[in-house]
Length: 215
Image 1 (tube, rainbow, N blue to C red):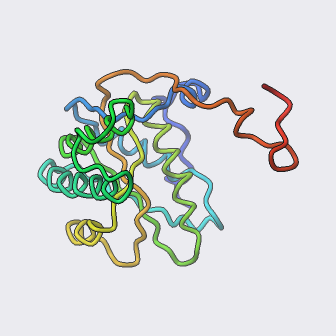
Image 2: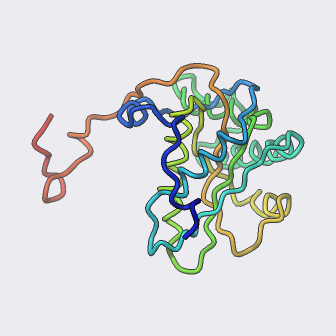
C-alpha cells in the first residue's frame, strides 16, 4: 500500500466537523479567483477517503480547469438545465419562474454563469457492478472539504440530451457512468445555516409514521 492512500488530514482542513456540516450550503455564485492545485488535491484526497462498497473505489473525478473548456461545457449545462425545466414545470425563460421560487431562480443564474466558474468537477463511477452509489459519499466528502477551505460548491446534474456531447467533449469512455457536476469557486456571498424541516417530521421510529422521541 502506498503512502498516498494513508494520508493524514492536511492542516488546512481544520474547520470543526460540526461547523462544516451545519454551515454547508449550495453555493451557486462564484468569484473569479482561482483555486490552487494544492487545494484541489486536498478535495480529491478527501473524496478518496469516503466509504465505498467492497473497497472497489469505483469513483472517478474529471477536473476541468481550462477556461475555454469550461465555457464550452457551460453552454451544454445551460441547455441541459432548461431541458429539465421544460420537461418539469414547463418553464422556458427566467420570466416563467415564479419569484417565490428563489432556489430555482438561483439555479437559473448558475446555468447562466457556470461557464465562468473557476473549476468544474464531473463525478463518475467506473461500474463493474451495481455499486455506483459509492460515488455519492465521495462527492459529499469533496463538498465538505471544500467548505472547510472556504470554497463554495453545489451538486447538480445534467440532462440526457447533452450527455453524449459532454462525453465526446472530454473523451470520456462509455464504461463511465455519470453521477454529478460540481462547480467550485470562492463564494459571492456567505456560508451559513439553511432552513430545513424539523427532523421530527422526516424521521420515523421503529415503524413508518411513528415519530421519534424529540420535537
